[in-house]
Amino acid sequence: MRTTAEVVVVGAGIIGASTAYWLTEMGLRDVVIVEQRVPAAGATGKSGALVRLHYPNPYETRLALESLRFFQEWEARVGTPSPFVRTGFLQIVAASDEEKLQANVTMQQALGAPVELLTAEQVAELEPWCDVTGITVAAYEPESGYADPVAATLGLLERARRNGAELRIGEQATGVEIIGGRVAGVQTSAGRIAAPFVVLTPGPWANSLLAALGLDYGLIPRRVQVVVFRWPVEPAPRHCCGIDTALGMWFRPEGETATLVGLESGIRQVDPDRYAETTDPDFVAPARTAIAQRYPMLKQGIVRGGWAGVVMQSPDGRPLFGPIPEYSGLFAFLGDSGTSFKTAPAVGRVLAEWIVEGMPRQDVQAFRVTRLAEGRPWIDPTDYSRPDRTVSR
Ligand SMILES: Cc1cc2nc3c(=O)[nH]c(=O)nc-3n(C[C@H](O)[C@H](O)[C@H](O)COP(=O)(O)OP(=O)(O)OC[C@H]3O[C@@H](n4cnc5c(N)ncnc54)[C@H](O)[C@@H]3O)c2cc1C
Image (cartoon, rainbow, N blue to C red; front, side, top):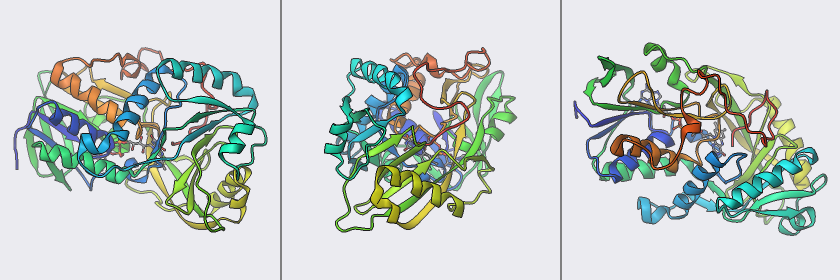
């Protein structure tokens, strides 16, 4: 077991795994990843793991597009079976948001994203079992889909391990050691690891590590739920992944015969060490009502299970990542805000470049951890979401 490292990564969710992957692909060998439970034990293992491109700003769209390409090239890059399933993705919005949708698609296309606008008739042609009532225009991404988030995390970690990294499962980081304003290492439940660089990727457990460093970004762990409905027909229809902002819902196929549904409801603050991991009984009926509005056959859908996970919400609903300016050598990815599985391949690359090359090759200033303290929260004029709501997808 190493007592020194070039970099310690705290947390083996998809972001920590991707960071370790990239650090070792860029040539570092002395990388230690400490994981308090098991890999993907946090938000990642519970994720809907939609891999799509539709964001209302170029910064997240760029990360999502780079990451989609990574998922498409998974076997060549990672060397494990691909966790990615291509299904296509539909973004549906309320009539009042159609102009914003069109503006977002224009921006995404300018960045090279494979996305097009469909009329309601074209949506009906693509998805004959979909009720297109209320849709006049939708965004369609033919190359998008979803992934198995646990397989993705394990694949990246396996590659990092083969590249020389050490993965320590069941070991908790209890504090970051600072000497003279610089990172000196990490204290863990098993001892001390001296290191000049530490990357915090602890998901919804971030607050205690940050508080010990005198840092507070207003992050709130929030519980979100999903439920799985088996189609009541055989063969079950194959359908796209989708987000329907008008109905406050997202969905994707779950295997060959079922559909996974998430809603903008029942979301509340919890302790990530003590929360109900199964779906609340009163979540199922609204989820059924919502999905049946698009796929009427699912009114008779058979409940096959469901679960809850915890995401870390930032005050402006966008992730914060990069260097922590108070402490040289300290980096973090914080406040995933329920939307950071799909961008993890690109985020890991950026964090690794910062450490290995001193600067990322891409402008990611929008994600800087200081933006809230500067009084400049992230606001997207073409965002559809209502201010008091979030949806994990
Ligand atoms: C129900 C649900 C649906 C979602 N759907 C989507 C979606 O469709 N698309 C999408 O892009 N995103 C989605 N998300 C969000 C996405 O899953 C998260 O943004 C992403 O997984 C965050 O990854 P992470 O690595 O930052 O955090 P996590 O996965 O939470 O990982 C943090 C890890 O750090 C470990 N850890 C914490 N503290 C310590 C410590 N002190 N010492 C050692 N280890 C520690 C934890 O045990 C954990 O394994 C969804 C999330 C949920 C819950």
